[in-house]
Image (cartoon, rainbow over the protein chains, first blue to last red):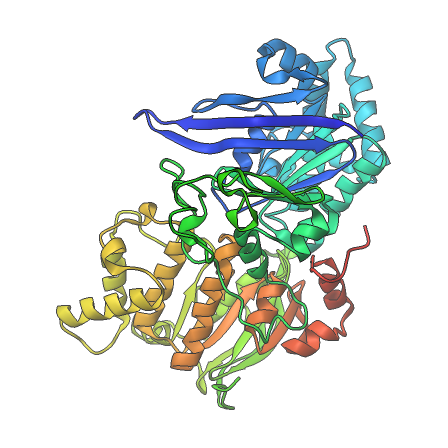
Length: 331
Length: 268
């Protein structure tokens, strides 16, 4: 199966009025394969949401794409003009459920009127009744109660709103759905229902791939096929889910895994440790490997001077760390 | 468990709080009874809307109960009302809340936030001693006093703010701390640091802690006993290990099934 999206050396910076640059995405290369769930994990402020908006073309100032490409079907879609993007790519090829999307429903519109607006924007010739019919069919197919369409957002629970937004985002059958922390504000049972909805969308081939952004590794363990770990604007490790969860290689991924708190026997008796220090300020990221000031395996004179390349260490498993090679071209 | 003695610190009996009236009446807390021992860590565990935060607000005397009793150190405090008595109560029962952004007056420096905590400490002490205590408490929550004292809340991260709230608790040294979702707005990677600090409060001062959370992992890691709350009622309570490995109530079972864990895969 091919790649639906390929990002090559993507750079996106926020520019402040003082002329400073915040390098939120700084040299990210990544592919989204057809049929997969790609998880992107990392701490707050590591650039995961910025990466999501670049991939979904919702970049608005002060965020600017500085360099790199996002390829789909062989074309670099970053170079397309706004109108083509809006007509052909957004919502149809790539759709995004942004963070806090459940608060993005218009509080004064019934859900059905919002849905009609969305559909008529893309199909001006479609009648209201047709639009509504299409929404009804989709809601039924995904076993969401039809009464949602007649409700106002405040009449729905958080989990229900999140599912509604997800279904509306996929009404045009986009190939790739980017979901940015879709479950963070929900409690465990509603969280699971939202994940089930995403799995159902994939199973019915309504969408082909999901990019799932979260800081909850245990959640990715249950439905990601691959996981990319992001730190300070870069990807430090990417590989198959099992490999990242049970055998992480980068020191940062290891610490991230060991700070996970789950209700399983054995957790209570051992002391869970937080990762020491704080994520770096992306105005002036650390030199060399950006994790070196917090890294337990830091090698002076190497990690702080050179950037470790992202090398394939095991099958489909790439790591950016000198512990696994990459010094002076050796690998 | 080493610091738990069998002296009861707090007991609530048939606590009930009703909101609204007539048709739209909601029993947010419905006939809830439990007790907390000195030096014990417990969790009130439930989903959004289960009534756990209302229970916490009743215990904190921020909200009057509709019926039922709250007994603290053998004394019925359900109807405390004078400012003086309430202040005395809050000297012994303190809370930290979910949103560290909402816990601060944005115009006050951290020094002032922490100095204000001395208003609750009975014995009057000199300014030098106050400064010394403030610095000590900041150091023990892992913050550098010189870096943070002159800052204002918006200059600090969420995790740092929650640590300042813990430093404030260290100054007041209450008997009971109610921690309402203390880490839900904090990154998974720094969560453990805050929780370990909370566990140290019991180890070093014998403080009792009641966590209010929907995070089952947190509850299991920190607590001796769990109280599972659903629709205003406590549906199951007991030893944390026992509940996690062998839940009895159907609601508890479902809750545990829905938590993403590492070593058992979900049916999707």
